Length: 318
Image (cartoon, rainbow, N blue to C red; front, side):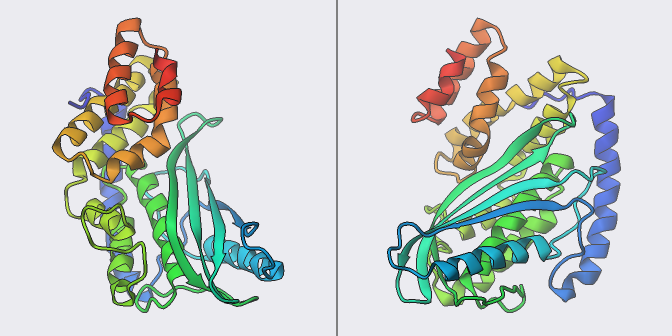
């Protein structure tokens, strides 16, 4: 069960955000034909790294060029408009690990994406995404500029990177406003649909996989609505209120534990469970470690059933 009491301040904020979302959706709809949304007032502060140590004898200049092109692509693109009043930047890291050079212009690798959202306290950030994508295949020639057209997707690398940018923005918007990330999640689904004809790895439609397509579908088919509401309460009703109302803030953060447990009971293989754990488990256990011995023991037992391989992280609750 969610903790329903989040305070008058949170309720007023939700109403204000709701009105803002309606207005933004109308404006976004009118400019959607342009392909990419208007520039957000909240900037993305992006760090990009391309690691090619595993590819011996490769053209290092090509990977330096790729790193610069990726940074320009992400940082320079106009991705969208986030709800809320904050103008604090979203810090994110994209690390592309090249594992194989198929040809001098075709590569395979892994993409690591991390993102952090500012909280109500100016000095603190919270992780919202920490993902490792092992199915990256792409073509690239040195000094090739990167571009992306959601109406005509031709390149797997930019499609994948754009997909994760929209995921970051969707998670940030959902943390700021109830179901605030819908527009961005729909963009993820549009990309996943557009790439199906290419047969690229990582975009499989099999619901038993944890592919990008399955992730996009999950955020758009209604099955994630409860999760998204929990995500909002965790952030806007939890982390953002800790310095104003510590007790209520911790209650809303702690409410995520029984929710994830219930989600696992209903659908143990749901992609949202590892998505939450990879981003939040370390922070969650640290916050819960301030509770009573009974509360910590209960949280430990529940989380250990959900994330049985995370003993080191969960040790804080013992």
